Length: 109
Length: 115
Image (cartoon, rainbow over all chains, first blue to last red; front, side, top):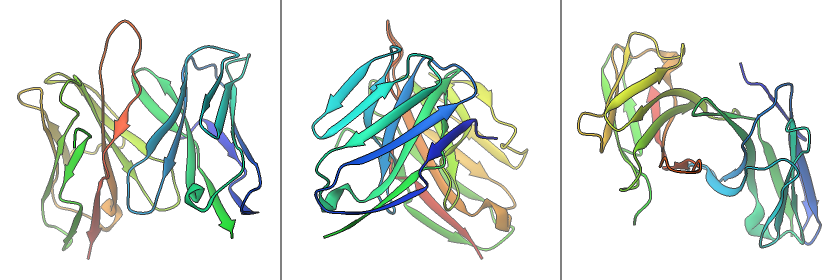
């Protein structure tokens, strides 16, 4: 079964608000990834993290790789309607990805 | 378009039929992965290839499933004697090996519906 605990499962926010979601694991991983998936499409890579403590930004998105290597968070600032979708954290172990359960983001205009 | 390409995008078939999906990875990527995603869940790993060699298979991959990558480029995933529980999105991803790990990039998947 999946080893990642992603929260929250869903978020309902107003346009312009900031968003924060996180992912924890009981095991140590050396690579943490964040993907976004729109309906009917495949996951799209947002941010890849390879170093414990690393803080990486991609536009309005910021993600951090926890110092313990057991957690990561993703922040979205000043949300816009196109941010709607499902966000997945993932870790890489033995060449394959293990995904969290996803956070469904809904934005009210 | 230089992304991962999957065909068909949708497949509807009757229980018991065989189906085959195709994946064309990003051209310079030597690793190719298959995942399955059911509604409300994250993708789950099925199998992966490095070049033409199939290096790992998940326990999710029953003996009705077979994947090939004969020339180390495109891959096919075949499901024989389909069952209702096979209904899912089948995703393909690719990546390259090198001095540093490269992230996996996904195609848009094939959605399989079993009647």
